[in-house]
Length: 79
Image 1 (cartoon, rainbow, N blue to C red):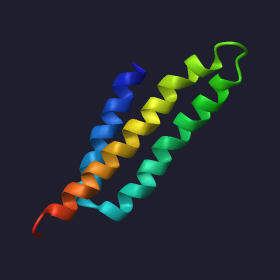
Image 2 (image 1 turned 90 degrees about the vertical axis):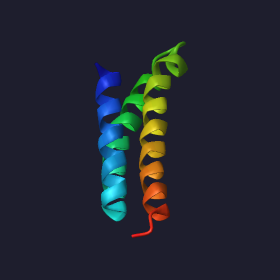
Image 3 (image 1 turned 90 degrees about the horizontal axis):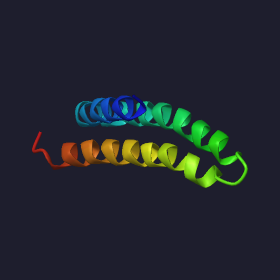
């Protein structure tokens, strides 16, 4: 379920970054904040914290790449 939510947010962020590049940065930061909190909380578990934090770190990376790709594509358009 978490993967579907992250994928949907990435698609939304990609479209928003293409339509409104400046506004997409705020949405990207807003989406990354829960991922960072989840990773930080998971990292505190003894022994396997790094394994539990990895999905949250990957989700944050995906959100950054999605927003960046939308802004990059917008920069290449002739409009």
